[in-house]
Amino acid sequence: MKHVLIPTKLDKVAKDILTAKGYAVVQDAETDMATLAQQHPETEALIVRSEKVTPAIIDALPNLRTVVRAGAGYNTIDIKYARRKNVDVMNTPGANANGVAEEVFAMALAAYRHVVPADVDTRKGGWEKKKFMGRELTGKTLGIVGLGNIGQLVAKHSYGFDMKLLAYDPVVSESKAQEYGAKLVGLEQLFSEADIITLHIPENDETRGMVNKRLLSLVKKGAMLINCARAGIVNEDDIRAIKAEKELLFCTDVFPADEAGPKPVADIADVMLPHLGANTKEANFTAAKRAAEQIVAYFESGVNTYVVNKGIPDDLNENYQQLAYRLALIARSYIGRGTPVRQIRCSFYGELSKFSKWFYSPICAALSEHFEFQQDPEEALRYLQEKGIGFELRNADESKRYGNSMTIDLESGAKVVSLRGTITENNLMVSRLNDFDHVYFVPRGNAFIVEYCDRPGVLSMITRACGDADINIEDIHAPRDSEAKHAIAILKTSKPVPPEMVEAVGKEVNAKVAFTVNLS
Image (cartoon, rainbow, N blue to C red; front, side, top):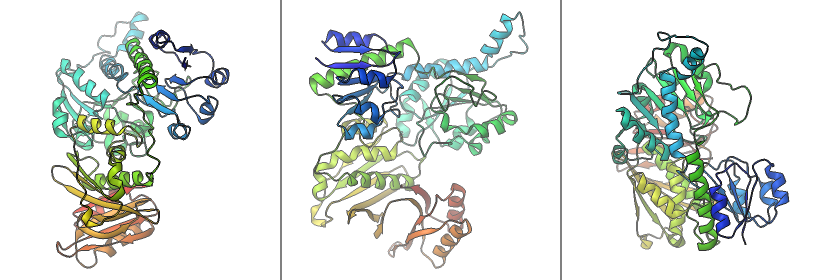
């Protein structure tokens, strides 16, 4: 008999399914997790929602084999520690997506039609029809930032309002976006043209504070911003500074902490809800049902499709996964983070050829913040297919004697970039970038990369710009392609080079490509 612990409020369908299969199930949403773990050390499977699964919790459950997050996000679970303890962590992606997508329109309608203040005023005996003059969704331009499961459903639900759709997603191809009726554009264009902007991206180092004064300064007067993703994506002080001038409407259901108490955006939010996106009976039922079914499939059939922290073979050095990730990340930055990738081509040489599939997820993780290193390789291929991105695994030409190395190429409509890398003396090494051979660049820390037409004085212009910005250069590589008469400067800097400096240097040296990438 398998023992399952459900320390959260979850639809009873999960317990019913598992009990019917002969599992012993304890469901208790009132007792704190630490106490439950101490009381039930026999637990082999854990189903959670937003509860934190810490190393202490994992250690308190010596028989634990899997944790299932009834929902998509699993940032509250220490997946790396779970892996060290041979605990598989699964999620149920898409189970809550419709609830969040519908909430977007609930908030938009509430803000446009003054639902909350009009209700309060009418209950008091008021009749302020002129005061509560509203607006309609029909015919408006909706900008969707992130075309994942939720963003796709938002696009689908917008059809009934006859809305024009713009979308930003640097992973989705143009053809895939068109399937959802959306025109793929850059962030600046989306913020400039959309009447309503809705955010559906994860919070990480790249997206944190992404919606800032620069983007907000582009919005139309009277535009609406809806955040049902994560609080940290938006710079709240920048909204505060620009709200009156732009007559910006701001709707949110996400906060720094999911808890009672004063909310930092109370003075600027037109509609604010206590993280209700996935809080529907239907979403709770679907997530609970899928969590239970995944546990049954996991124990009875060995199905681990949704495991997000898969290990790697014992005889594969995990640093090669890091190498694949960093090569793809540099390639992604070379093409442009906002430019859709159409095709990935890979070659794995030497002993790496037999481990090819274990590099799919790191490559996906470099392309999309929605993907994790340790997700299932087959899931990575499905993810690329869903995004309309082609993937080709080429046969490695061993006559080239590259040893244990890999080549990763990315293609967009206008750009192609190819990188080769290996590991030398346990150091990750980029050995080639396009036609620049013998690069010998260690992809760690902050990198500032500029490709330009080779001529005297350009390198000194780049280094001088760094000095003027009080940025130390810790290492520099400047190989030349004499045949094409091009050169590339790869600088490791003490701190990230700001975007405005990248743009200025690129213009000053008439660069073919100029970009910065964080490889820490």
